Amino acid sequence: MKLVVLTGTQYFDKDIAKLLKEAGVVAYSRSDISGYKEVDTSQSISNWFASSRDYVESVMFFAFTPEEQARQVMTMVNAFNKKIENDSPVRAFLLCVDSHNLNDQIQ
Image 1 (cartoon, helix red, strand yellow):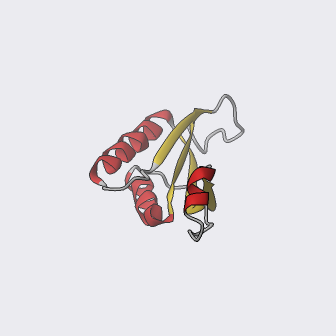
Image 2 (tube, rainbow, N blue to C red):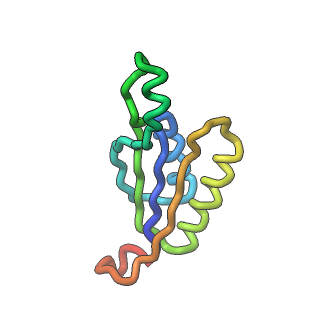
Image 3 (cartoon, rainbow, N blue to C red):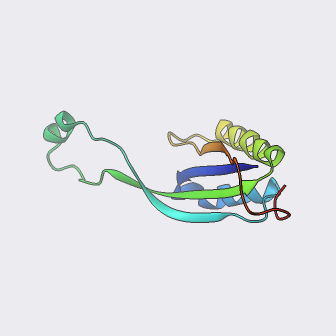
């Protein structure tokens, strides 16, 4: 079993949900998150009146899936990222689940 984690900007919220559905993932969780990036202070000083917002509204999806399905999600995310013109692609991570109590629910 794998834990599949997908993150992206809110712009890709519906696209990520669609990818999971097309991969056959029937149960997943979704959460709004804020992505932060360290801001170079030398740029902040030179641009005194710039917006102070240093985060991006993002989403995180995760699902427990069989390994084959998790690999399918990863393949689909990679294909999706090749088609988009965006500096913030969808990020995907597969994590091993050593043990669980889901027995017959997920193989």
